[in-house]
Image (cartoon, helix red, strand yellow):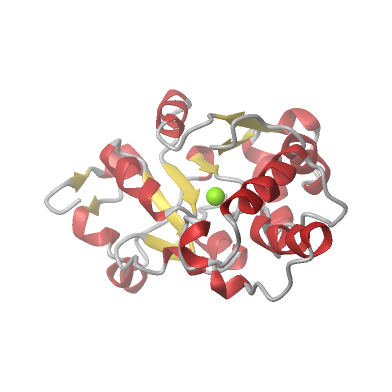
Length: 223
Ligand SMILES: [Mg+2]
């Protein structure tokens, strides 16, 4: 937020993140922004899991809806950006949440490797999702990331707002998220968002953002 100061101690001892330095150009130019691997957590859908490609697959396989492109998802509110009946959107989401589909949910390239690397030294790796219940996503995380089951932890909050209490409770300072609207209350709570670029969050020009897991990996201050 303009005028707010992000005291260095809060994130990484010895480094100062003035409010201004959250502006991504300054951050990357100065190479000051680094993510503390012991204090980072992750959203799951559209950050680790390529959920919207699965949405497209379910729409095609089970509802005979063809022609949706990933780039069509320009809003977090699907009714606003794709021409599909609201009831069908809801039905697809429900299948997605319950694991009722034949298509595969895939991780984004590099995600399993980076998360496994993180989990080797900083377990448990925390995932906080706004899904109402973990459902099949818990097993998916455990099957996708080559770590012991105890090295990952998944919390389903049921709401975006509730993510913040969980993150504060676990002393998380950095959260990788794709929903732009969640980034603002994160900053208010003293948590630095890292925005995973998606077609629906392109209005951003303020938060640190990454295009890929390889880019994200470079920002993590591994030992
Ligand atoms: Mg998400």
